[in-house]
Length: 175
Image (cartoon, rainbow, N blue to C red; front, top):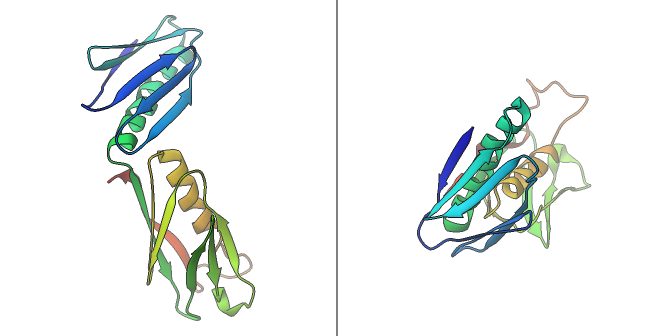
């Protein structure tokens, strides 16, 4: 099986040993790949991922690596963005960013604040009832958004009644 990924203009792509590096105007991303039964070549503005075996596992890796490399190319050119919505009906929730943490205060009227870690090189902007997470790595943006959403998970309450929290409204996608 074989898959090809087109490399946009202005992107520098390198494969050294088993580390794939993509550089663009927004930054640089690196990804380690297993090259045991997979062949990856970069030429004429295309990345070619090819299986050297007919086993199902290696054929699946071709699609996985092609998708990953395509996501890296999108990330270094336009970046990724995820949107979250702050929802409250009982107590107004205050969200702020301090250093590499997002603090959620007054959640369900509790005095202690909840916090979520920022993953990797992501940036978080808070405006009223919307949180925007941006970055060049799709995995990092998605994980940061998940950390923020998980910080307001309610246990012991009926979710149909107590709908307060922070919810993902738009998953990580290219800007």
